[in-house]
Image 1: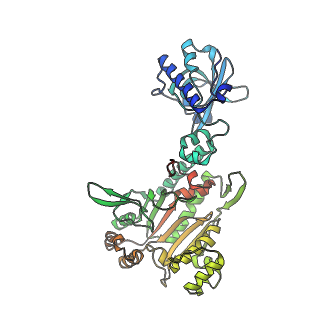
Image 2: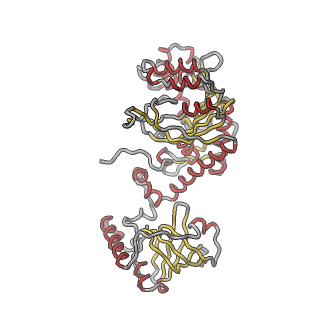
Length: 495
């Protein structure tokens, strides 16, 4: 008896999705009538599909489970693939070897169903590792059809809204997210091998601190108090330095109620690390070593190709060490004119007009300068560059350089965006109080005076870093947008 899967049937190929769902529901009901639970139960396996393929030998007795991602009906024989995000293995069944009841159950299966199979391994005439099915178990009936076998999920918005379909239909997406997970695990090992302890700090704050950003606001009913989701863990991690920790890091989720773009998602993953008795130069060294280590381990080397949607090579990033280090003022002068910082504030505004840099009337002079930096330096810098000695108004939590005009900071720029800032941390409580109050203006209620009091107990000199892990993954994998490296990016609800 030959069966027709929903891949090969010409009738079903032209069916609507509603019709395909109706057919699958009929098969689901048929399974129940045959005494089979369409949504299965525990199944003991000996290998995953990828493990079996990687360690394959003929004549093994195996039990493997996975989603049936292909099904080729050849009359009395069927070939199929069992898959998960890690890989797949081919299966073979001789329908003549099935009992009448087993054949009826098998005929209820479709591409997309999860099954477990038991059998013996062999190589086909073409050398394909294969399992000869001797017994099988239905684990989950798929009531909706999978994405097209050959084209996967091509629509970008559908990929982001229905990531499960993207992972089913696009093996390259699954591989990217596996690589992201492995990178984060390797970051943990890298830091732990250097004596850093992983810690956890609160995600609910009564005062949003550690960065200049708009927070998400909420309210705690039992305490009757307003709270915010954290915009950064920095102030709590520094409390731990005061408490006596000397090497700490947190892989944290942070939230900023700001714009969404190719480089911004309101919910993002960040690494922050603090190293007592170090400075921003040592932190830059460590970030350079870490990034190159990840590139060599997961990307095949220090040359990272970035391609467009059509596959055309856009650029190749060169992460070869040592990375360039240049001061903020030097880079801006090279882009905006050697006399840029000799001009007064109105002259700099006029120069922005000449250079095509858009500014607003509300911007203060240091914000105008930063806008020039972002448009003429940052967006045009692709190979790694540590931008050092940033204007002191921009980073109120960093130690001031001798002379007081800049702070001991780096901003790591790669591929036209900031990947990581690093500071020599400000540990003078009186200076910290003054700079936070200057930043807050008339809204001094937004200053975390508990943090200032903590600093008065003494915080050792320290270096600190932040790394946007989503952006780091974008850079290392060549992904064109942050949504490609975040499993479930925030999207506007469809009406």
